[in-house]
Image (tube, rainbow, N blue to C red; front, side):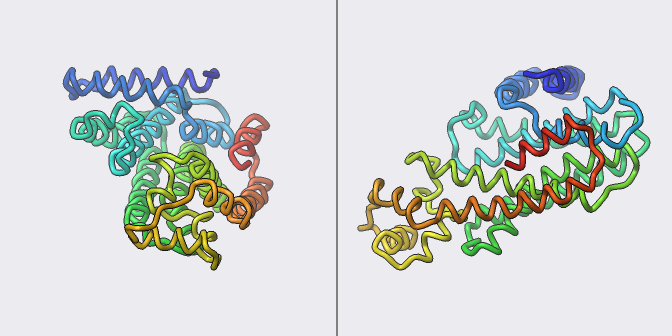
Length: 300
C-alpha cells in the first residue's frame, strides 16, 4: 500500500471507530469488510484526492476523510452488487442479510462524514455524491434487468453504473477545492469508468466458471458482437441465451470464436475510443504530474 492508500485507510479506521451509533456487531462486520477492500486499494478515494490537490492552493487534512467517505459508499455498492449477483467470493456474501445492514450504514456514514468536514463547499459535494450515486443505482438496475443487448444501450448502462462513480470521485475533489466543477473533468471521469468496466468484461470471459458473463447469460460488448455473427457457435450461444435446455456450450469452440471472430478486438477498440476521448479532455486540465500519471494508468 502506498502512502496515499495508507492515509485513506487510516481515515477509514477513524470513521468506523468514531461512529458511536453503530453496535459492536455492526462495527466488527464493517471493519472486516473494510479489510477485504484494503487489499484492492482505494482508487475512487485517490481520484478525489488528486483532483482536490490539482485545484487547491494547499491541502486540508479533511480531504483524506472525504476520500474515505467515498470509499465507504463504493464498498457499500460493491457489497450490494455481489449479493445481487450471488458472488460468493467475498466475506460479505456469507451472511447477506447481515451484510446489507452494513452496506446501508456505509451509505449514511459517507454523506455524514463529508458533512462533518471543514470544507466551504461540502454541501455541494454531498449533492454530487447523491446525484452520481443515484445514477449508478439506476445503471445497476438496468444491468440486473439484462436488457442492454446492443452497443448503444450497453454503453449507456455502464456509463450510469460505472462511469457515474468514477466521475463522482473526480468531481467531489474538484468542487471541494474551487466550488465548481468542469465539463472536462466530468467527461474523462465518466470515460474512466467505461474503460474499467469494458476491461472487466473482457477479463471475465477468460475464466470459464461461475462468474463468466456468457455462462450467466449476461450481455457485454464481446458477447453482443459474437451474437451478430451468423455461424454455428453464435447460433449455439443464442440458443443457450434463449433457454434452449438441450444447448450445451462447447468451451474451446466458444472461447476460440470470441477471439477469432473479432469479438474481443471489437471490445478493445471501443475501450480505446473512450481512452482517446478521455486523454483529449485530460490535456485541457491542469493537474500535477503524479495525478496525471495515475489517471493515464486508469485509461489504459
